[in-house]
Length: 213
Length: 391
Image (cartoon, rainbow over all chains, first blue to last red; front, side):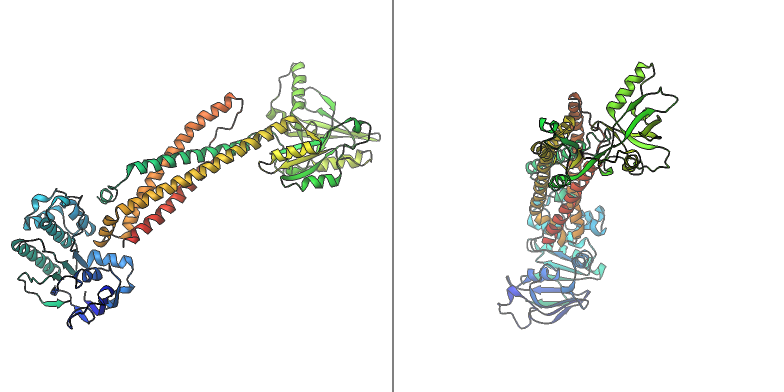
């Protein structure tokens, strides 16, 4: 699924002076399978980009196309289908359910599409070294641990694009690399692409494309 | 798991208050509808005269005896009564203008004969099927409605003759015969009882039979209308009673008492019904408001679930089914409480000598189904609105 931006300008960002090569106000295409870094300083619209792609914000000028289809015409059912099968997200504020355990948070997502069983989920937790948190409520985990749970939750569905909104902000380098490796493997497995938004750090990954805001 | 997440943030106290309010409302609703119907049905079947109907005549005073005042009704007087807004219908009661006697004509029953007075009333006042209430000359028998006092008298006679007394049903099987006569001739016509009345003192016959008798054996003087039948609109019996007093008319007191009681009790129950509907509406509103509160408390959960791909319809269904279950339990419990109330109230009525039919009225059940349906629709609309607000 190719995502096309046609001179998109979020209304709250219209008053800000953007660079010539900024994605805001220009035409560009996110080609499926590409691994993209979206670098920008705070307040330039990284989260706006995530929300816009997921259909959570409609306050923009220009056109957003998925496989040449205008998303402004999508129904709520179509957006639900996209969120289930086409686009996975790690939100900047994670959006986990603090009262539910790690297991329940992951099952809630995975069971929706029947993607992983408990063993497979546990295996991913093990890869990110938090398998011992399986039965702990998410609200009791550190931010770094919660970030890893949120990453695994995002991977627990079929997708063509994975949008990661500053997913490693609370992780040390070692855990960042582990997480990035897991994300890359899952994307390769699904022949999917990802967009990783960052405050400037590329996390030593070899991206196919770098975008600016 | 979805339910665990969505229904964890609950204000139990508020929910319990809403449940108790709805439960009481539903219980009173079904109870009042049930007894409103039962009160209106009270006395039906025991008498062939339709409900809320009385027969009135003018009060006889010394002036009538001296022939100064009239005891018959003019067409103008009847029309004036008909125009009253609480009056459903007014029709004259036509009497015989010829000699008629009534006797048993059945080999199984001893002969009993008496000169009688027959009358006819408009069929719309009678609680009998129209196909039974007609007569023409070639018919085998004329259908009649017998005063219950007449049956008591017949049974007294049977008892004195050493013959078993007859029930209402058995009396309907006995053959009777009218003898119509005047100075120049005589004729016999078979008759069969099709119903009984407590309210009319004469034997009631179809209008065609009366016309036949009056034309063939009548004394050619114009029949005077000395009695009229008045039927009131629902719960308007008190006003008819007031009019009867004002116009110096009179009726059998039993008719007045039953009508007055039905009118009073019916009005009281209507008030209770109104309060019950209000209670159901308000408690339903509190439940809906509670559902809104629950959804706003879980706004984060709903929003996040939608963002991670949960279909809005699935979340709407979760909220909808949850409140359907709650109201379903309320409805069932309300019905159970009504049943207990009913047992208690029925036995109270019985102790007071009022035998009300104990069956459960279909309309009460329909009222429950209606209340449940209205709540279900309101719940669904509310859940849909609440979920899509977070989309």
